[in-house]
Length: 373
Image 1 (cartoon, one colour):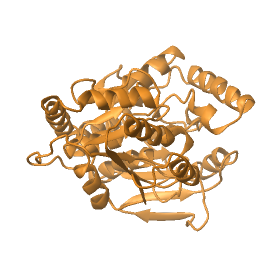
Image 2 (cartoon, one colour):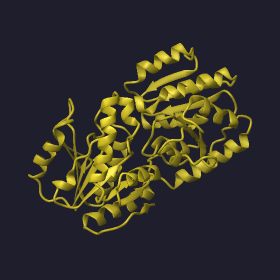
Image 3 (cartoon, helix red, strand yellow):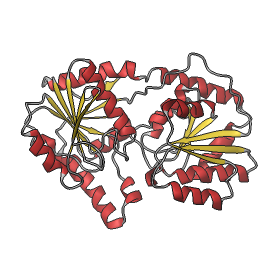
Image 4 (spheres, helix red, strand yellow):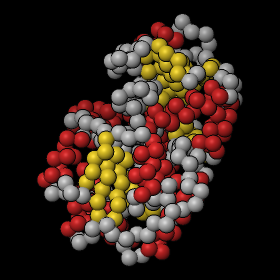
């Protein structure tokens, strides 16, 4: 079978993130099952217009405002695809109206307030409006996404057929949990792209609150992005230079080493499609403390695999962390719960099931909403 993924970024794009990691896993699995997989994406400086990497064909052309036309022009010169996957990142590709074959839509999160973190009010308001309009236009197109919050958001915009496919991780769960008592100084980790919608400054402010309340703690921030200079300034202003370390981008083994040694992962994003780094940390015996937002409240099960704050504020997040101090038995319970759950979320378990779902859609088989696995 022939599969085509439409996504405005690919793994080599400087702005690539978790969405591209997940997309790559899906297409790589289809290639391993003997299918042809193509990925049409935006062009960017230094990237070849076409290349094949590990069996996946990458085609790069156009950018914001032109990529849909470029995709249509390229597509019309190709043999028939069995399934086109129209991945939405704020803007859709409108493939159901030009691909003339089986088509599914793929959405990580309903952006909602994320628009406000990147654009001024008139543009952000238009972005939120066009989200609702686009989803309504796609209401009869089958969707897949990772979590209930995104599903509910799509349903509120009129989408009728949504399958949940949980994100997997490549991180292998530890064979046995390390001994890691919750004793100060607390070792806190933040792992994400340093972008406005991730609100990493809230993590920094949480550390300031903890120290103001007399709790010894330090933080390691892993990742790169446009928010780095502002974060460095805030760390200096809060006099936290001795307690915050910025590592930049790291290799997977180095990132995993930090997650493994940390007591807690913090995540304060505006919203997420799921929160891959939560499950990666869980696999290495580290629970998360997160904001009560779409995606994060599904990847972290409150009082089972970690903690979800009551409010989206650094003080509320600090309250949750402080509630654990002195209760090592509860902390170890969270570690075990997170670790056991992460064992069920490796790609080895999820990809065969998701690939079978893609193959059925490529054959034109109809199906209602499902949860995989």
